[in-house]
Amino acid sequence: MSSADDARVELMRELKAASQLQHAWIMQAWQDDPGLHPAAAMLLSDLAKHGEARPSELAKRRFVDLSVVSRQISQLSAAGMVDRRPAPEDGRASIISVSERGRAELDRRRAGYLAFMERALGDWDEEKILELTTRLAEMNADIRAVLSVPACEV
Image (cartoon, rainbow, N blue to C red; front, top):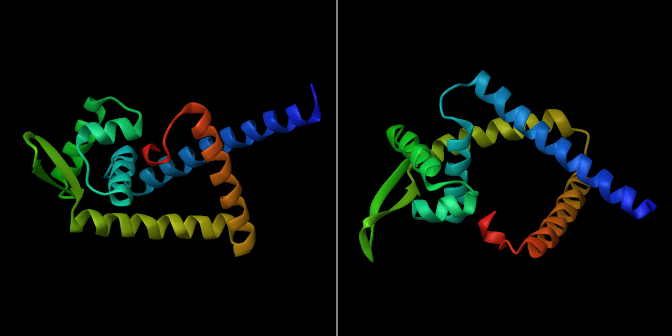
């Protein structure tokens, strides 16, 4: 195996570790502040980023079954964090969007996330963070292309 191959394998190991650490942080934050399930919060964040959508579109974008998204929407709806309206072209379908209460919850969670990142990467300067972000975005675009997954679906 060449050193280039070793570097690629090590990159995948570090990405896996980063994913596991992100999951650990999410679960720790949920234990500290129980309530909205982290998966429902991620769905809410997805809606805020990409705009209103049908549940089927959300399921496709999140790579989960429609039943999973339906449960998350039910939780978000019961908490008043999403609004639901009939789809204009098909009244049987719903369009889901983030409510004002949902936006306030996302702002609160964002503040916690930024505080965590400041504790974890407080000695990183902005240039270092932007460089890593740029490289990861380039890598993700290349991986999406190989997987044929459009950027808007992740």
